[in-house]
Length: 253
Image (cartoon, rainbow, N blue to C red):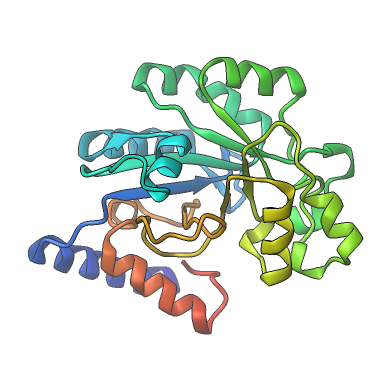
């Protein structure tokens, strides 16, 4: 029932945006897994391929570096563009390497840097993570590797010492908040660690006014129909999701 109501709202808002000419020029899509294990945050291979095909038909793929340059004012992005990111770094995404290479898309993956100590309770799954060799392989193919903390603990629940460990910076330029959760203490810690950008699960628009440490992304999971996916980045849908998250948990977004 909830999903049917959500679908009706999204499609209605997306249609109104199309009629009125409202557009969102830059969208960053957040995925987790791609496969057939039935986990809510695993998009099926077929659905993912259809979604990517749609994005390529209506917009241009860009990298996180290009988005960083847009935010800091080095370069404008005037045409509809998109970036693909994967959180957690599940090993199954390696199979997408050829698909992205053919499509000339260079995704980003936010990895858990100490996988042996990962917090599976927070993750909600025990799926196999990328090996060091697989991460290197993806980077060789143009992927960007960022940090998703050391063990994927909820950063807002940690002591100062624990937080400093979780956001410890290596060679990565970019950070992504586990579960999208942050507060002023977390923001300060990520800035102090020296990351150039940090990515949230907030709903919003990417402009020169975007906070470098609250870069918004659009979450995609197995509950989204193709019709919904096509309008997820539509301005009114983005605003609606933002409004709903102010009052409810984002279970049905």
